[in-house]
Image (cartoon, rainbow, N blue to C red; front, side, top):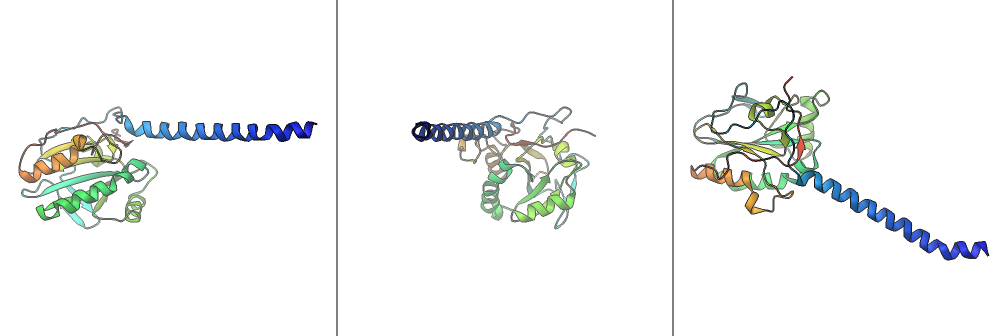
Length: 218
């Protein structure tokens, strides 16, 4: 009799287990999604973005995997793409950034990826290796967040655009949408298009959506 009851009850037990697992999976998914739908909070001591100025010292020049680059040289538009080696949101943004690079290559736009990581854990070599594993491109490692702090970037993915006059015209996030599919909030793309046309961007600075980088002063 007990065996018969256990057989009859087993489908309910199995169903309950499956339902609980499903609810847990859905809850975890939405918790992860919500993390990237909210703007990243600014760490204590992180600088506030200050567009319409020349690249701040000490980052008037960057040493990339292709040599030394002078930032703010007149006539060149530079997109600094802040990428976090450990952030899923940075990986989701890669195709969008690659699309911008391809679209504006003929206009002389230079894209340099600033690779962020965990301060005190990741070395410059670790960060550049992680970037190469994702396909590579011109990049500089920022293991201590020095470059991010100087530009007022506290989360990745993020962007800083230097226009042809040599001034920072935009600092902020790429998009409020995780996959950059909202044209209304495609802030970095709008700013880059404005820089190519020699115009001011619709917004000079925006919030960041993604993973906080350790941009606190040491």
